[in-house]
Length: 424
RNA sequence: GGAGCGAUGGCCGAGAGGCUGAAGGCACCGGUUUGCUAAACCGGCAUACGGGUUUACGCCUGUAUCGAGGGUUCGAAUCCCUCUCGCUCCGCCA
Image (cartoon, rainbow, N blue to C red; front, side, top):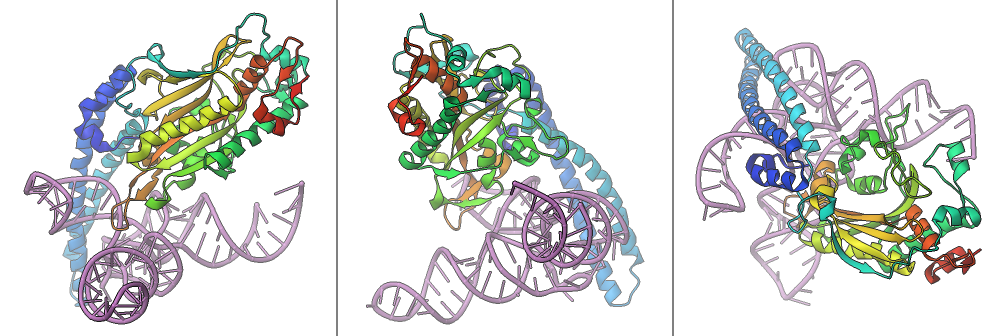
């Protein structure tokens, strides 16, 4: 969410930012509308407060006269008239603020200066690691997974529907191994504090991180309780400090959490849906950092590196993309996507999206810090990314480490967790 | 699920229609004193949104905020209703 002052004083910059996202047609008129509403709002506030001040004076007079046992009817009447006027103006004010808030909640963040303008075709490959395996003669992960008894896609579909998978045997254990491997790496080598969070959250939390109001149809909601299944642990973990003022010397705070992630993928039917490529439920380990504005850029790079380390240890070739403005999530100011290569399907798969949100989420969720004991609190900056999402890593592992005899070589780092060197 | 009690500033806690943005304490900040530290003493110390003013740090001013929302009233931290959360007891249960 933007500060209303941005709409008021930096509208040109805001419009330019929407232009870079290719969203000026949508948001340009809303910015204009918000400026009008802001002016209306302030005029109404002045009118209301003028009358409230007068009413307070009249009420004081009533109190004084009553204490002196004198007649106060005149001031009671005046106060009542003012009260009626206040109620009327406030009705309009409420409507104005409701509409203004709705616009502010939907306006995307401004992207950082080094984010290229345009749509995904303008994404930039920043660096790559490892050598993608030739795609000839390699099998897709669903064939390997089925042959080795790791995956049971038909039964996942039977008990829940398409987009839900059942892992079995070593496949199930591989999920557990990925969880423990990633959590251990981030807690012991990267300094993250481990957390275990609820996987259903309320509306306020979803609004705090920016999933709502925009992505209502992407979320699974419960029928009888006002709760949503989390699409990422980013939501519960970031909201951990909602409404709080953190001590500056506690920053940066680095948290990691495992969770299942639930996504309806309402608009994505038929796209990359085979095997483990796009699921309604997948598991991942998430990385979240809270820091001061000055350190945010460096903290973003640091976190991205932590996510990359997972792929390096798993010996999987990947590349890092700087997303163009139009491909950057609405809440983010700058995002790096980590894409792992999956030779069986011949595709680069997104396994992490590392974003710097600036104060966009912190303002929504009211997460602040006090720079020094006597200074005013200011918003922290939030950064997060997957470290990593299991399903696509699982797919890439099977495809990249498959051998000619149909088995799968287990990368060194995973062996202590999986208990075998080769899956056969 | 049922019954009862509760929610006040960064923290603890008083407050029971107007004298309360809110006593007192702790923490914190500035100062005095003091070989150092500590103690003592003096002073300061909420947030948001408006308006005015300033090159600026600010300063002045209005309004609101005592879990959230609504109601009663000229006037609500205080009375009433709804909700949320917490605690205690009962029931149920992995």
